[in-house]
Image 1 (cartoon, rainbow, N blue to C red):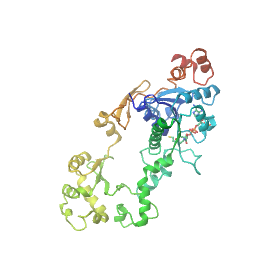
Image 2: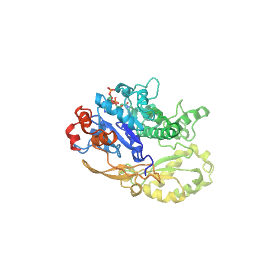
Image 3: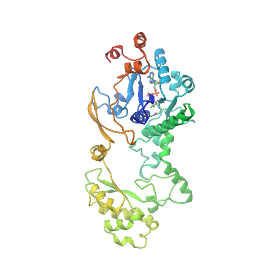
Length: 424
Ligand code: COA
């Protein structure tokens, strides 16, 4: 038994944001039916191809635990099938450009007419307002949501981050909205519309930067390196390099091998509670009692000097040795792990966060499994579907098309290649 067993999801998503959401629903046990344009499919199937002729990792890594039906939703028979799917499903998820669903003839009002219990979940770049019609990709959301202006170093340009907070982050937000709406439907009996804008999702993750924006009214942000460097603050939250975003100062510091290994670094936090242990470990016991160093508030204008001294010590150790020494002392540190190291991490493999999956076109590949663990709803990661792999199965078993009706539907051209469907 899986948490969302029995929930049918009509997955009209593409690229990254929507698919990450429906993949989570699939991992929690929902039956996810991915609708794709006949012969074309999700654009990511053929983007960044590494194995010629096979679905890309971009697609496979975002579309596990789903079934695929080819369906032209602009063809009359296609619309009939889509209407039947809306009748049968509990949740419909989409992240088309603004207005695309209306142009197909499936407005929220129409969907409610077909199935009043339907939960329609949508991701758009922006919420209602002057940018509501814009098409949006990841980095636009990072820029518009406050992430880029607060990421990077003060003397450099704004930076986007590698974590896909606009796409996958908004997918997560939407997923929470969907299960919340399913919970409410238990009591109300009604579906509802769930929307998550990528700008809003990024902003939610940048909450502490808006905290700092308002703290500026009360004076300089003392935990930022620029305070100690005597650089005045402007009118907006500045970029803070690798400064810790909280009240405990932290930095990324070089470790042994940094000259040749781009990831031979550690994050090091001088948490106030363990300051004396930090002083002992780095060989600066005099700082435990010295005027200007003993109290956290007195150290704020000396962070560059303090972290330089700590770095002299971390540079004599590998990032893993720093971890091994500091961890038992409760000094919070963290090695900068490369993607290669993460893929080889036994611990992440043991918990199913990193898994190997077999695929008929591309062989075995490694992917990120479900990062959320439910003790009563274990996740088995199954490979992504081939384009239209389940078209016949869904038409027959979910919608009940048989015999002449099935032939009519196939002949209409709404569901992909007739020979391929016959071969299923
Ligand atoms: N059958 C028939 N037509 C289909 C179809 C199907 N199964 N699936 C999609 N289409 C059509 C759509 O109806 C749309 O047609 P229209 O323009 O005539 O209305 C068309 O395909 C293209 O869809 P669109 O969403 O505009 O794709 P795009 O490639 O031009 O834009 C995005 C991609 C991501 C920029 C855009 O979808 C978007 O802004 N989405 C919302 C924000 C988002 O999720 N962004 C992050 C993506 S990771």
